[in-house]
Image 1 (tube, one colour):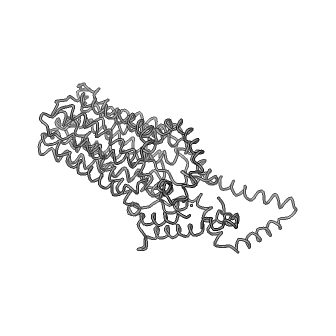
Image 2 (cartoon, one colour):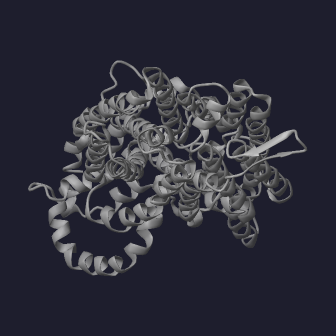
Image 3 (cartoon, one colour):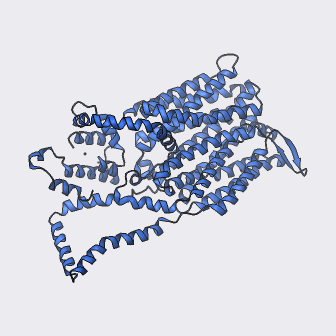
Length: 613
């Protein structure tokens, strides 16, 4: 609202003057907090201290400006914790509003099951939106109109297909990587390095793709497709060249083509708010489907022949040849169908001119009707003199007016991004690291473990991994439609961590003989609850993360991607190093770090539990 503080003061009823909020005091306190945070001086207080201090002030005073300035989602937390507080004035408000709320809840409950699933999947994608997008004032509607101009359905579809193909590319080699390494004269456990080399390259590619997406979307996707085409071709040629180096080089190229940072950024910047949740859900669904289709496709490559007595096509090389062909098709489609969104600078020119003409036009017309422009000038001078009399109030209200159109300044370096990580954010990133580590250990060593203990064929391993991948969507349906409506997300988070820990414990080879049912059951528990954990973890992370990390190169999506990628690299390295102790020790040795990291994450969650809202 324009000049809210001034209008509030003018509209006060004298008899009730002592019961109005001290709006000016609240604004000054928030301003002091934000200035101390931005300056980074020794006077800067920890966020927990600031929240407690402001909570006491709010027990007698309103919340939007605090969230805006301090980069915290404090409003939800305050209402939740104070609604049942015996001394809170919110109780009296809620008592009067209870009948209305009950009526609204009855109507909402009929729609919640259909909307919660999309919302949960959208959070799972961790496409963090700017504060301006989440709560735009009427004057900010132009912001979404700009996005409308950038929206192109075919380009969005190509973006999602890129996501799908990359996930297929990641997991299509898992069932056959150990056999491929044996064929090239290396140990079977070198499959950890083969799988992990793609993740190593992704650590670096995520940064330059994130920076590149500040200027373009088409060129990064084009580059990604070309690099993946080359990488998969090298992966397939390594068999006939009998070169492990060429094999690893091919996987490194595939990792350098990881455009997931661009995929997320395109949805965040180029999809209108009314479609963004569906697009985010599509991103998660495409990732899950690719994860399942990769191993499923691998089980179809049960053939062995040579083309022109030069190129070998078998279960080891066909993943590379097939993916190279698919990326070639995608490259052609991308070239002819993708539309580069116009930059914001071009879109802002016309709306600004229209806004100026809208403001000035009526005043000029009024002056012309009276035969002179002089009254217009005199009126302006009178208004100026009135405002000069109350300069401080006008400045405060001016800040309020400009906040709607002023974007949060993004961070410009990794050091600046790290300074914005509160203890709650660090714990959530650690949890994300933990779940990705546990899942990578499970998936990457599955062919080794099942081959050693149960003598499973490549086909059986592929079917097992495909079935795990297919659980992603049903699990998210249950969590999104039901569990998230019954329990708080932090409760689901802690319970999921405990279940992942139980799954890891059940995976240890303690009983002799080690049965397939024990392995499959424990793997299912670990994987399913890691998927549940990922959804609520990213949802909570988007709430506690500073709004300054919603855009720019070093955004929250990049930080979470890097945390997960580093976890995968370490997990794959652990598999290879553990292989030197023998395949009989591989399972238990690799599960020990998973268990330790999981227990540490549970302890860290308990320490920050009250700050998760």
